[in-house]
Amino acid sequence: MTKFIVIASGKGGVGKTTTAINLGSALSTYGKDVIVVDANISTPNIGIYLGSSTVPISLHNVLRDENHISEAIYMHANGLKIIPGSISAKDSGIKHHEKLSEKMLDLTGMTDIVIIDSGAGISEESISAIKSGDEIILVTHPELASITDTIKTINVAKKHGKKIAGVIITRSSGDDLDIPLKNIETLLEHKIIGEIPDDDTFRAAKYTKNPITYSHPESAGAIAYKKLAAKLLGQKYVHSVTKKEDSMMDDILKKIGFK
Image (tube, rainbow, N blue to C red; front, side):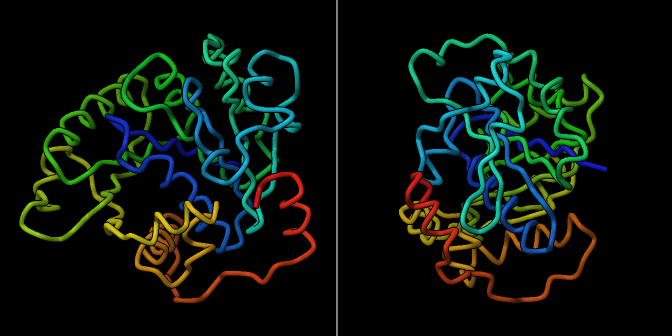
């Protein structure tokens, strides 16, 4: 049975898209077939992050009923499948986000896990993304403003009867300036299931157009996401290096702009 997990946040800039990509990549290292969907309709970033800002068929085409969602699936070098959005100006004002839940259901049976990267905050399109998932994972920084906005998103998810799977803390420095994790759990009334360190390697991974779990598998950030993936799957984390050597698939991906 396909599981639909929405990655949401109360505000932008907290690492939501980075989490969607790297959690998806980490889950795939455990043998799961994963599709990451860029449901940030107004400002999609997954294609840009992974090295291809334009694709022949995007989620926007699917939402306009021009193509079936299976036609919008692309594979990255590490085996992660993605459904990117369009960054074309003509698609920036698309108002078909209400069709998202319907289109996501078409992925049922096609994969093990669908990771849905929501828009930030509680806009109408973000709510459409939340409604399309089985469960919600919230991403926040360990600071009061970010946590306060996260509470609003939690309330929206609860209003629509969605399960909160947990909270991920990003850019954690572990110093006295961060709000302690136990205090964050008290404020949000939900468990923290992952703590992602403030790791400069994330910038290096973006430069190579890869998930950090693929380009820098032994980095602190990559290990944190792989531990999170293991926890979500109910498995024990075992340290291993997952980066692959360049292959024929890499050559193909380079030609179409994904590497």
